[in-house]
Length: 412
Image (cartoon, rainbow, N blue to C red):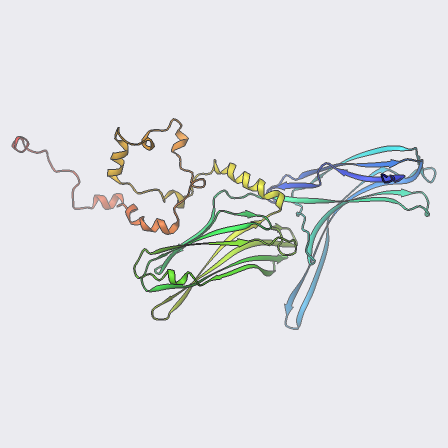
């Protein structure tokens, strides 16, 4: 037997329950909230007024250390409010008499791009938006008719199409840390590649540690740090004990982003608090004399809502076709080898030497092709060093003969 329908219903219908703000707070154009308030009554109804209110509130709680102890801070802030009055109180009489039937009240509200996005699932901080409709009855005996609808506000930030990487080199070691996943969702696996190359014999690897951290900054003054994931690898240390230069090692690792709302928060930035995430690595070395050294690297990542990660990756791939290679990637092209160039220019060369019909086929797209690592670049960096114009002019060896050969030398 189907359930009986209520005699009176007040329902908020939204065109979209989740709205997306595109871009940073400073340059976002905002979005529009649209919907319809529906009042259904099967019998005549006495109503004093019908109102709808949109509200957004922000809250945060944190502890700050002082000399006398800890001080607890609690902040609650109203971000935005807007009200609609679809049926005003009567000027003469106590109520409006509404006949049975359905009544629809459409509404629309432009939301500015600077609003903070929704933050849920945390007991100490949060951002929430909602709509509340109230149909006020004419007497105190009858309860008011109400309905509440949450509104989710998401922000889609720009995602760099190039892989996130950090690399450096000193007299002991050349290293690079790379990940192709800049934007991730809860539960995703983040693959990271670590490249090591020795530049001085005698130094060997002790261990590698990696940490996924969440940073929350309150009012641009106090920062709380939370460790989400941690690993320590000592098994690969015996594999990297170089006795000569240019010995290299590749170590793939993987981080798993927590799945629950309480375990990890999405990246956000507003006037009250700021949340971001980073991957931090420590490479520990030791030499034969017992001296130790540590090299620290950091990669930023973005934890976004599930519904935004696919769109971020699609935008990154689309923008990848328009992004020129950086200077660091451009200088990683293969060094000039005359013999190889002559082979490519010969008529009997392979298909790869055939000119492309489209000029764009000659442009390298490092973000769509496997790129040589920073450590691999060091292997042939010496070949790329060519003398400057002034150095070539000061060279004592002439590249062009001083004069033409004699007639006797030619016939001989």
